[in-house]
Length: 339
Ligand SMILES: [Zn+2]
Ligand SMILES: [Zn+2]
Image 1 (cartoon, rainbow, N blue to C red):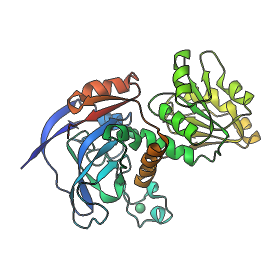
Image 2: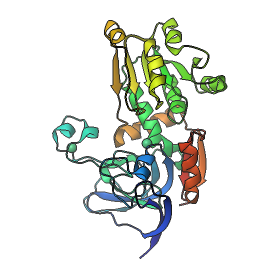
Image 3: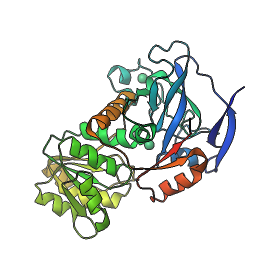
Image 4: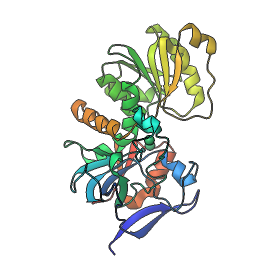
């Protein structure tokens, strides 16, 4: 049997092991993807540490996967070998439950498929995916460029386009890391008056280069007051994973404004009186399904939005993962297989 390389975790909290495995065969409704690149996402730590319900071991992480369809299982009408595809967090859905029939495929009630959690992900030469979980990758995007768009890009793009903000309105992006540096670009390209909020003056020029019209340094300025000077934000997109940073900014919402949360924090204290006086809301956003990823990729080609990446070969997974966990990466780490 032909073999492949895979980076697996054998137990919760265990190390990455580079192992040789048999190349898996796609079952009914599935495809085999020859992986070219896979981004490292903070959520991969859920796999590594065993902190996600239903994760079993050994498991190969990775849900920012770009590659080529290498083999098609029985009953797959959507894909042919050789087509470029991307795989994200959502690993598929049943299509017949009530959520799916309402169009809320992300909330499928009968099937909880998560790439790199319930099935092996993209830290490998090949990955198996359900056909409906694959997104078409347009020409004009390299595998390395496309990979981080499958989670970091998808989450920020899909959140912004569903946020209710209209062109010209104030949209603040809280945090300027892997998610935030994409969110600022998307928000600016969507025509929002884009305000970047982060810590430290050193990020100011980057924020403006990415398309922000103003930068708020929370070490020197009060973000809520600064946003109120602009009339209040229609949307604050919180990409950070710190509750205190969100709490410091939420007072910057305008009338009917929404704090959109895509970074998980344990719990958050919100000023209820302010919320009800301004008819404001706090909302979480699920990244999206394969069609949302596909739209993200298309929009990125059309508008020139790109992730800034550090690229490492698969064998250097430890180095890449450590840089991501320490917040040292500028701004996403992408593993390449050489395939
Ligand atoms: Zn992710
Ligand atoms: Zn369903």
